[in-house]
Image (tube, rainbow, N blue to C red; front, side, top):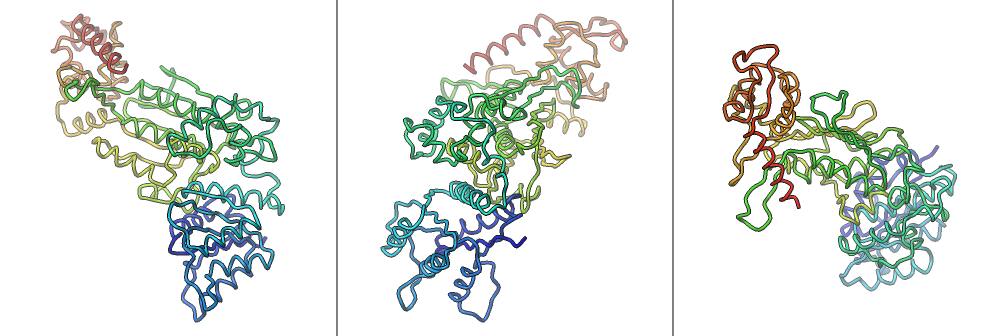
Amino acid sequence: MRPIRIFISSVQQEFVPERLALRDYLWGDPLFRRFCDVFLFEDVPAQDRRADELYLDEVEQCDIYLGLFGCDYGSEDAEGLSPTQREFDLAGELSKPRFIFVKKSTARCHPKMAALINRAGSQLIRRHFTSLPELIAAVYASLVHYLEDVGCLRTGPFDATAARNATLEDISLDKVQWFLSRARNARDYALAETTPVTDVLTHLDLLDKGTPNHAAILLFGVKPQRFLISSEVKCMHFHTLEKRKPIPSYQIYKGTVFDMIEQAIDFVMSKLARSIGTRVAGPQAPVEYDIPEEVVAEGIVNAVAHRDYTNNASVEVQLFPDRLEIWNPGILHPPLTLEKLLLPHASQPNNPLIAEPLFLTKYIEKAGTGTVDMLERCRMAGMRQPEFRIDDGFFILTVWRKRIAAAEDQAEQGVESGPGWHQVGTKLALSWHQVEMLDKCLIDTGIIELMEIAGRTDRTKFRNQVLNPLIKAGFLEMTVPDKPSSSKQKYRVTEKGRDLLEKQTKEAGADEK
């Protein structure tokens, strides 16, 4: 099948980032790269031809004319017409499909460009955009409709196709109104909170011939999992370094993408170790977690927003003593690679119709900076660099917890790590594994169980670096003190240890409130 050739027309200097981003998106998207090719003047090698002749030849050969109109009119020829004007007129004369996207701006518009925009509006439907994410979402919707009309798609992309048996009654009015309120506050979204649901869905391209599409159900559905069973997030907390039963804490979260994101973030943050400072700087005591909340949120939001919803697997969030792993059904699509995630890159959402409302509510930025920000936050927190990998159809993010990483580094260097707690302001704060160990030792507990909690494998180092300092400090005691190496030896919390554990738990709860 011959590729559908898309000619992107605009005043180049005004729309350089948009032109390049659209090209990269259309080449990288798994659907559009099957059917489409893109012409940009920037990609043409030097030739012994006039530029205007090349432009018009390409318009004649293209299947779709995609115009980006802004404030500038561009250079004018002897007849006072710009290349953009010439291209638009020729595409019309040749009856080429013309998709026009007008960028809103507070700047003064060139009179001839204003006239061209009005002329386009009298001939066809235009779409307005204010940002690159909005432009990509609008282009995505227009091209999907075109591919359906010409018979290239029997069914559209997953998030743009109608949810089977869904009606407008399956859309929650409360969730739509919540979205409008948040979007107006976060991004100054144009639609008022009183806008009818149908108008909101139409504006966001979430209707397929009057039926809510999959993106609409995932964003605003009353019961999204009724239509998409695997659209859930499984959250697991392990005391061991590997995924194994029994799982101490296991939750499956359902609902809209907004619901699942919030619930999964809360799950992880409630399990992380935290240290609490003093109220010297203000009435609210600062709380520091062993993984910054912004990093946790970025990883979970990316997984929910970009996962492959045609896959029967679910997003999995797995918290171990030394790391957080987030498993996302799906893979990276060219030209994006694992290496490019470490550098600034173009935003290429796998589900643009889902990503757009997440952008409008500031859950994501859609600027290709999310992974870079994550790396920087981890670096500033003194943590190991997160890792990305692809394994058996899953994109996997690994974030290393701060304190266990530090403890491992000390152990490798032969440095005594001390009793495992540290002074924060005027409070004595237990580390994450000391809290869990003291909890476990409320009942007499053997060394093997405690080593699993701390993620240690060397019994001698564990006894010298963790257990003995706790015993010396009076927080733990041996059940057979006269035989420290006995196979029957167990450990229990002392009254002093109980008091410290109870005090820290109460203070943490009070400061969180």
